[in-house]
Image (cartoon, rainbow, N blue to C red):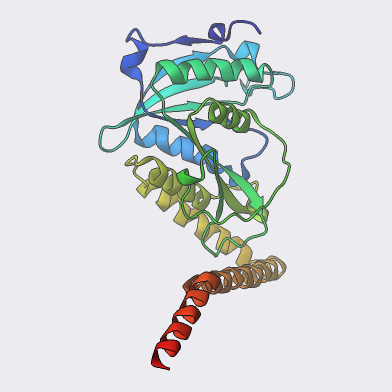
Length: 303
């Protein structure tokens, strides 16, 4: 493997240790981001938090330009702009002045393990303790119900109260998920959230998904991140979605069918939880046996 440290450069004269933070948020897109949940989340964070660039990666070594060509702007008789792809590590500050890091940009096409080694070096010198990410995944759920999510972590204690929807399943990998795996192997805390996005909104901006992702990140990291503007955007998009669905009886019936399916599933989970609670309250076989033995001894004494 070529030297991973040649993949990036620091953009600050300040010593790296003085730019560090315990939390690193990763947003590299990957093969899917349903409802643009991750993109909306990143845009909100960069718009609402004070930030500076700590390091930049050499994307010329990592991106297949012909596979996903960057956009250029043509104006009448000349090219006027170029959307230069960039993979950047930001240092942001939350509402209470607590710093955190954000690695965001296009997912590299090449040299995944080398990129991960470079990130691991940055994690080490910047004092990162936990890594968190969130993205959207398509699900057969209605937009009119609470947004669900699939939580994952290298330590179950990092996601208390988790109720998995999936069992054992194989999925296509991404650099972001491989980074989770490798950093987990190295002993760092890694947490991820797959936000459930209605399958009929996969190509749209589903801001409710970004709100759910931000809430989950706030809870898991303790960061004080404003949510107001993102919540307002979610309300606007929800109204627009409802208006469009209201114009089509066929689409409306699909949504109502998903609502019935969702409600039946939620009721099943509720009953399962109640049953588990009731069973937990029952005495164990050993406790019943001990009580029965005590009853026999009491009966002998009375005789």
